[in-house]
Image (tube, rainbow, N blue to C red):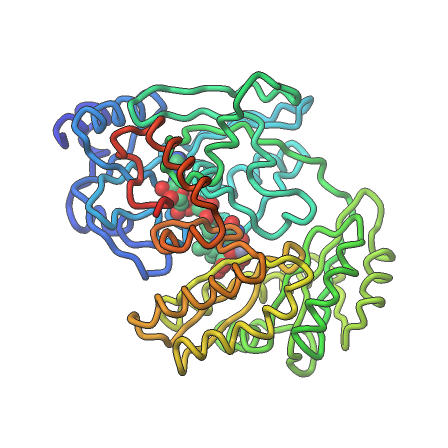
Length: 447
Ligand code: FAD
Ligand code: MLT
Ligand code: ZN
């Protein structure tokens, strides 16, 4: 098979040595490391189709991979699969200004797409701190969310068309990007959140938005995590709100100690909301009025691009800071808005009970009810106990066990907490219809 793969993509693009494959078999966190007979790097959709047709003929399992920034063990070959890297499908087409859309290859990074949109005076509004590496294909496959979902939605909402290759090499293409198009099943939407189990995304037609002329960013400090969570309802009333990001004292102190960036206040506060509003008019008054009603203990308004970037850096470097303590258990959950404060208060105790001595780090997209619960200091044997305890708490509260990172390999066993047996059976029927030999990411998503 490896010899035939060389025939399809060229010998230089079938990597086999341990050094050559190292960065493709280990995930971003360092928690998941696998092994592979080969990393295959096709140049275009036709080569992807030929690779998959060959793997299907031979029954060779494949892990599709983009930027390998996924956080749930879904992008690396933990069972000896071939890695199908889309990184060479990196073209970003011209912006269509009339439609406010562009078509990007699966391997284009989020930063590539954002730059192309900005070059045409527009904005691609999905944003996340892995923007330099996360790819269009990976973002579709995980339905990536990020920092501005409250205003602009997730990747699914931005997808106006798609191109993908099925497990048997069949190419599906629907890239016209018509705004209204009720012609049957929305296969592009089906690929969103499919985590490489139903097809390999090769290109996406993405919706852009007008670039707001005015933006205001502020940091609100609160006397308790519950007070910060309680303030979110007030802030969500602001029509121009584009972000309300939660941070707590421990995480902010960690980022400060590791990277020397800190909030512009004399002392640390128990909790913070990093808020941003953007509009065609100056949104400062409406944001200030909502912030007043939210009754923070202190407020810092960023009045320059540098000051804004400094506030965002404190929030965005949480992932990296926590990871430096050793690969954490990363749980990524959504709570109903009304339960967010109670969950934030309870989850540390839940973690402590299931893994004594572990530390809990909380941050996330509070505007979406989305909390990133990271746990460090738990022996690997305790990881499952912590995962089970936190995800069960979330499910009891009516939340979701994955807000944005997906199920991957690590949360498969918990899918039943939030999906009914009938739904999981339907997932399986879809999987076997599109990938009857189960060669596409066979160890991901489905229990
Ligand atoms: P990969 O990690 O390569 O793959 C992820 C999954 O998609 C795997 O299951 C893989 O098999 C599948 N896949 C990849 N490419 C394809 C393809 N072309 N076709 C089919 N399947 C494919 N996520 C958020 O949602 N919000 C955040 O705010 C956020 N912030 C992050 C910050 C940091 C610092 C890091 C490291 C990660 C963050 N993530 C976030 C997670 C991650 O960036 C996203 O899940 C992203 O969408 C993954 O893209 P990728 O190209 O790296 O995909
Ligand atoms: C974030 O919001 O920072 C990301 O989803 C990454 C993480 O959860 O660490
Ligand atoms: Zn996130």
